[in-house]
Length: 114
Image (cartoon, rainbow, N blue to C red; front, top):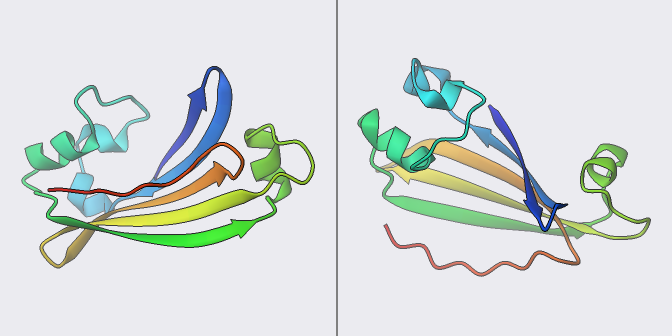
């Protein structure tokens, strides 16, 4: 699993947990806590995995738990949204992103072409 925190103008806006099958990413940069210069999907291609589609599941808005509020530096009462995106290579799920976003500053628009 990789954990990411995205900032805009030094303000945290998203927390992301990314899951991969350890057998699929063994020996790759995806096992390391490093930024991958040309992106994780390029690293998957180097491993012989071609992402063919994504499924996005928007889970709605809710109040954050204490850890989320602290990590996103949210004032009391600000909601978060949750989105789960699964990337597939054919019928095999190869990546799952679980994203918690500041509900006041992050919007979602999806156009995914592979």
